[in-house]
Amino acid sequence: MTGDAVVNPQNFAVRLGTNYQEVLEAAGGFKTEPEKIISGGPMMGQALFSLDIPVMKNSSALTCLTKDEVAANAETACIRCGRCVDVCPGHVVPQMMMAAAERHDLAMFEKLNGMECCECGSCTFICPAHRPLTQAFKEMRKAVMAERRKKA
Ligand code: SF4
Ligand code: SF4
Image (cartoon, rainbow, N blue to C red):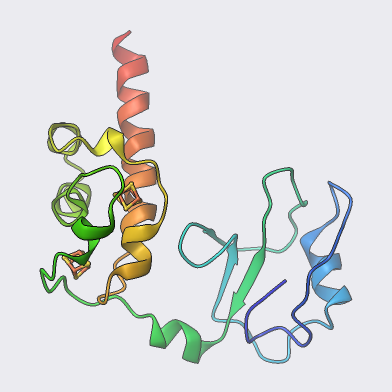
């Protein structure tokens, strides 16, 4: 349980099926209204709209961010610095894949070897423009897989 919005951020060992709300209460609740709640960490996690969700096998963290934390990580335009390319273990070009993702261009995403992305999160971590690269690639990979299943 982490993030500046939580009274006592800490680790818990909980049973699968425990409601997130109960875990939050065990951490003292919110000290301030969270701007964003994420299942997982800020790089790889998924935004949540409710805490009425059970802890599952793949639950790693609940990240509750304040307005200031969200503002500090606000997305800006790509400055073409190339840092995402330098860190990518899959030797793909995240900056271009993101352009394809923004147009939901599945064919271009595949052409750019987007399916080689292992969703490690390195590009999102290093990006000075705070672009949600990994999250976008995760969605694009899912969409490509769904298209492939339709055609099979
Ligand atoms: S690290 Fe971010 S800002 Fe730099 S090229 Fe990649 S997407 Fe653009
Ligand atoms: S998330 Fe994908 S594109 Fe980004 S650095 Fe990792 S493998 Fe490369």
